[in-house]
Length: 527
Image 1 (cartoon, rainbow, N blue to C red):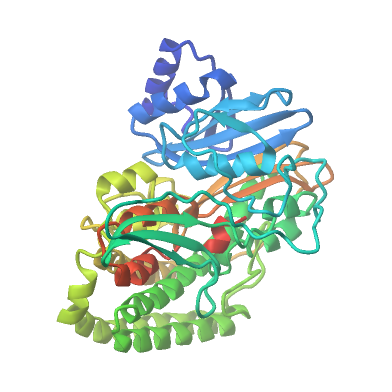
Image 2 (image 1 turned 90 degrees about the vertical axis):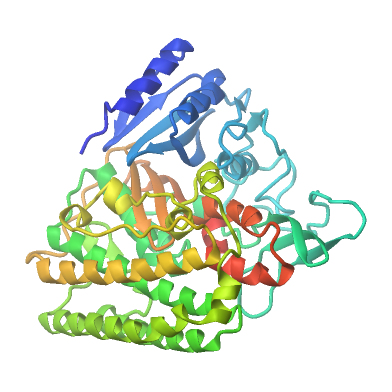
């Protein structure tokens, strides 16, 4: 379905004309691309905000001596890519962060890695750099080597200017970046009075892996393996998004059976992670029964995935042009029985959770995220849907096989930890129904098609609804079938800032359950 001309874009064009903003139009598959002059960058965002468009993602790209800066917007499943070309001799662009809170950290990321200065930005502190590079070194520039210039010992990041709160009885609690157990590193700085949290500030980026730089020069097969490791618990979703973007660039249509198999993989990944999260959230408030039961169900689910797809997390099952593995008739029958068994188990396990008064006391009203705040930050997935954000890529910007299936998007409006639990529960049930449909309707035919080399500079931009929510992945090809630019925006990038609001006026001991109810990926954020 093409969204070249839709009511909100026509209204935005009218606003641009009013402000004398000229547009150079093009297209990436179904996504309209509007290139505008740098001086209009902030005004364009303001016009889009007035029309209630959501800010989705932003990234930059070096092209010879100039730089392209991109901002992806969305309204009612209709995406628009704003783009501006910035002269390399004057790397400045008006910030969109004063208009869209979601643009704040993304622009800081672009500045740290490419050196583009966003004027009027509300926060000029570094974000992703820490102390790994010198002040005027920018790792995503073409003249910066992949290995960088590592020193024997990286200097400690001691001087980050956290926000301070002062007053009688106010104290500060630093948490992390190293945590107990095997959790990834992230720093949380609290100010509190007694047990009440007054302010929380996050500091992420400790597991920066250089994904964007590593992607340069990769073949499609190498790139999808890299994409599958952006965030290991979302390996299917990120692989799918990368493949869809590359297939757009190559103008390649995959077999129908392959699309259905990708859908099966994605819904299984959603169920596995939701089962783990539901148990972990309950465990954070001392309800070990739920943790044991949902861990058991998740483990059984993962073991079956190993049987069907040769990997518990289903890594490397999605490849350019299709999928690497097929399902036999025996496996399909076994999976259908597995769906029935899981539904039966959930029907037995959920009532004791629903009726537990002590659990209710800890989850209901805790970690409140209002619908207005969720909208302001552009939260997605279960975080957004638990606060009334009625958006799901599978329904609102459908792609195969979801354009042939029916399902109900899980939605809650209370915005608390309990709502984020019950959205997950509803999504598990919806995924079970989707899996049943896909297995029954699974077409015959090939599972992959031969790859065809994309033209030099061809682009792809794909959105996939992963288990955490919308993933947006951009790819540009160089010559010789290699990657020039890869940017995967994990849902955590827009969800993490909401945690700073979720915990306000909660007690310090409730931070773990508030954090777990959001469950942002450090790795998915720290490209």
